[in-house]
Image 1 (tube, rainbow, N blue to C red):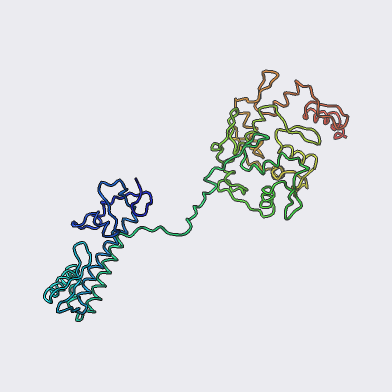
Image 2: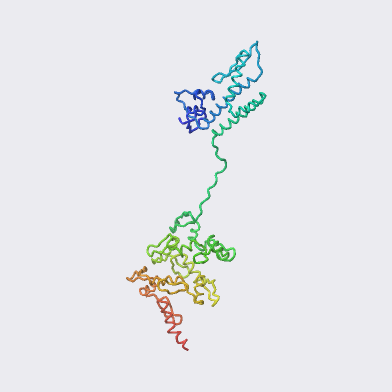
Length: 442
């Protein structure tokens, strides 16, 4: 039974026989110690548990030392008390080897010898350093005070060694959460579209019809947003101008870590395309990119019924084409643009600046997108294949123009006579040669 013999607590890891080592007295067995301290008789062949917990083990040892000290001090105090005379005899109190008190009448010589023996026992227990202090004591009261001080010092030293370790009280200290930069956020799967997103509640708003969505107005301007995150991002960028400067290209951007990955270290981007080996910053951007390798355009404009690869492209199309949103004004020719990037590229037509150089042929270009399309010419890989013939192309624009030869679609009408053409460059050539050339000659 792994249960304590005295308090019945579990687990009890000490045995009663270990009390002999704790008290360090050869003449006392653990059976006598239990009887002396607790008046509990324990037999060696008993079926009752003989285990003790740490708390009871320390208490028994402490109580044994305390009781032994108290009995010895009681002997000494009684030796200093007035003699009690009963019919020419003196009554004395003595303690047997089991520390049980007895009264006994004895002669004066016997009584004096008992007093001397008790005093000698107490003096032998004191240290040598304390014997020097006892030599200067004049009265019995001073001697008692010195003995009491020495005994208490010895008891304090023993209790410090055997004292249990107490745990600090109070609430446990909270562990600081790790920064979000070092911890990957758990992604949740949307049941409607099957995408894995970080914020499922915010993502579910995209499946609610636009007329039923709750619009959030900016605190400064009348612009409306569908999510709190979009409104906060707009307020920080447009009104507060909070941006970080890149130490590589010295460009001020909203998200510095994303800019460094997408512009200066694209090889470290976590998501890669299997077909063209391009890498992207998120799974959502990769999913949109994968639609460029297919003809799947599941998102349709509710105004002109034109189809796009993603809902983001639909929103941009509606703002740019149907809403005629152009908030960026050129300071030279007063021409307006939908995107700030388009204005920056347009300004280079006035300044004749071409900061982007091709590493293969040394040509300069005014925009990074133009340079990107130009680099495809130097490559031998043609990733865009025609499904109706065996031809393949380096650019998606080339494939789009080639498909007109199969579909025979003529989407570009002439602005003067209404004749339709399959390509916009053919329409411009027709307008110039048939309608504008003779006007300029006049």
